Image (tube, rainbow, N blue to C red; front, side, top):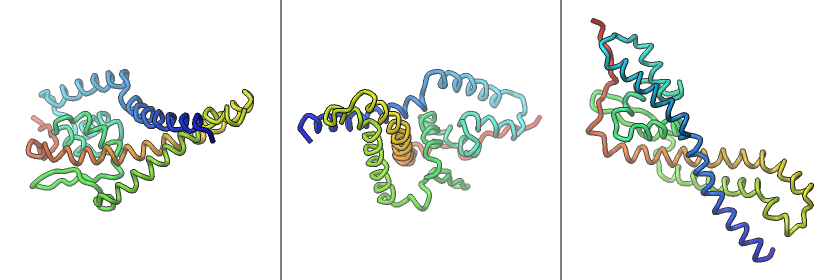
Length: 210
């Protein structure tokens, strides 16, 4: 393997890392989705603060709609909305939910790592495996382009290889970087949350009937 090929491989790995992160950011933060979220959140909070009595079912569904999933309880969403930077925290919680637990008591409310992932090392080695897997799979997906000159691929051969490597290894690369991001963003949420604990309202808003 010559120096030119090695240089291409290194450049590709660096580009892959940057593209993967931007891809996740685009998926979870595109403009049209943000506009729709803004419109719904505005209407929902107007209903919550109005004089009309809302049924608990409606409130729960509203929180589900804000989070974009029914896998999160309304009380969890209500807690996150009391934190500063709640929009980012909510996205992080939805993404990292499988790694997190929500603790709610009379004394305090807090999001923590699930028992299996509370040890820092248990998260570090998983992040290492996921990120390494992403680099390997992403490189495999694009490897025909890097090796085309070295192995003297014909155009037909190149496209044939790409037709296999892009969908197969491309999906594995996306799944790996998403798994890495779940742990990484979960760590950011749990750590940053500590700064705002004193500002938390412990219970979700409940409308009284007149």
